[in-house]
Image (tube, rainbow, N blue to C red; front, side):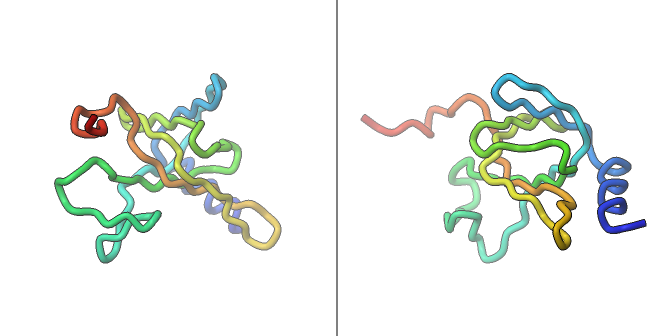
Length: 118
């Protein structure tokens, strides 16, 4: 089995069911969605995170290349939660795309303390 087949098989076998909506188009598939681990309290984009101060948690998405994602337009629904795609890229082995990874952020109603003061 080649690398592409091994990764695709693992995602299909162990990944969670996901629904992806982009500009009204809906697709379904399998992917891994888990909290993004961070080092030294630095998140993607260089934002320093103080525990309990705000809602800036991010999640890592790893899925098959068939389910394309578009930054700031695709919404991923997995494990009863909805996430907006903040960044996505294809991972290649040679010239062959193997999987797509993305950084997700929970989406939903803004909390009162997330509004700017007048």
